[in-house]
Image 1 (cartoon, one colour):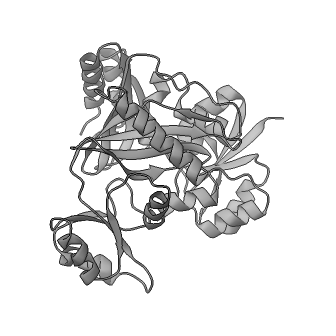
Image 2 (cartoon, one colour):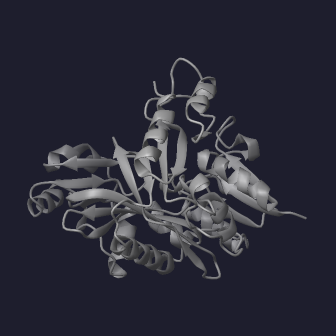
Image 3 (tube, helix red, strand yellow):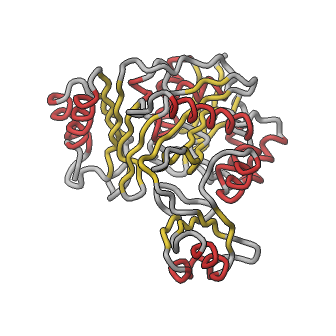
Length: 375
């Protein structure tokens, strides 16, 4: 009888778990939010992930439950645990991916490097923080933000007046210093319930309009020191928060050569898509191994360089699949991954991976292949 993993959420991350699950002989089941989602190939249920009975019914008969996103409410997660369901990552860890204020406070307790920050509930508190940080700051909604949503750079408290006015009693916003950084990095680490961890190479991420556009693995010019510090930060977070499964730690490399923690994701992550074709064990296979407490795979790169370029928006006049033959013919070394999602400005509808020995050539091939799918 096969091992069964239930994935809550029907997006592209769940979709990309399907192939490694098949290869490992794992039966994968997906709770999709609606019909026709990216992971529809494995959808065994469609329903609201916020409804306890829907999720409880889905979880019956699986050996572990994991996630395509971090939005399942805490009360649902804790009810599953009380029912005896193996939930990975568990609610005590996911809490810090769901609430940025709690994350900042916990990382501070762990002594990990991060931007200066404060919790604010009114204009006076926000202005006080801005005045103490060169008149600028980054305001974030603690919950629900992703891909640049729920984030504003402000120079005056009035620029966040609508968010402040919308706060319920007892709610707060997060404000952080506007970090002077030279580049953004991401560190991935896998951890299984019994404690084994495996660390991936630190990568450089390129953001456009708050959305990840490109990833270079490993991060160029890291010189060993950056990789060692990033790996230590990732390991301390995974252990300190009790994460099980894949963890992505988004980092700023500052202009004065420090690393600061920006965001956390407790699932496979866009910064790790390169690993599908560029690592011995992809992040998607590794996540399945980890949540089932199986021995973790080798995260080593298969080639000196791997580059991932996101396909954002997609062609508006035809389907990605209609352009696929021309892209493959022109760039035979490119691996094109599409998500079965309708084009929409800024939407992640696929990505391209290229691996090789020369970074410039790999970057060119990845960008050129992805360009076939541009608007």
